[in-house]
Image (tube, rainbow, N blue to C red; front, side, top):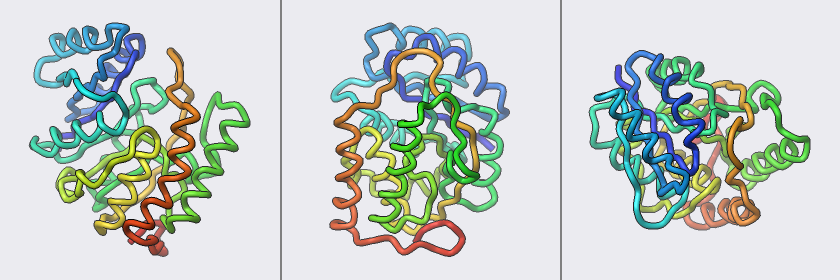
Length: 245
């Protein structure tokens, strides 16, 4: 089986070599770096990694508007055209440990269309977060779950594994959100499309290098997006197995 790992980057030159090295220890993995015109030279670092690992690391130097959502949408469209069995989303800041990749892939291979690396499936599994950040994140997930009906503990996590054929079923042109709201948008669209969504536990570790991309604008968008989604598609009916339909 072949797994394509999408890694969006913006000023992650210190973290990227460490992450890529760890990802490539997992058999069958390929990496596509989605560099968002990083002014710190991350794109050049990514090119050097592609040269060092031909056939396993590739780089997409993005142009146009910056943002997590537009980066992932471009990566999704590229991934759908490959022969990969699975497509993984992973942050570049080392908060998503590649040691969980085999389990995410295993769950997807067992029949899940989307596997979410959940920080809240077994209590609160985060490291080095201040209390206010934990409260904000847990409240955001509760709020989104209540408004949308998505039967998931962690809707805002960015660590995910898709079955590529399931990802190809999504109407990507309907996804217009960016930032953390993009993660909700694509999850909701997946549930509307009838995909089987399963959570798998991870431990999230706050970034080691660089600055967080979280902003007040992103938080406001995350609060508004659930209402936009239910106005467009209606509320999701939660299933008893923890997924959504």
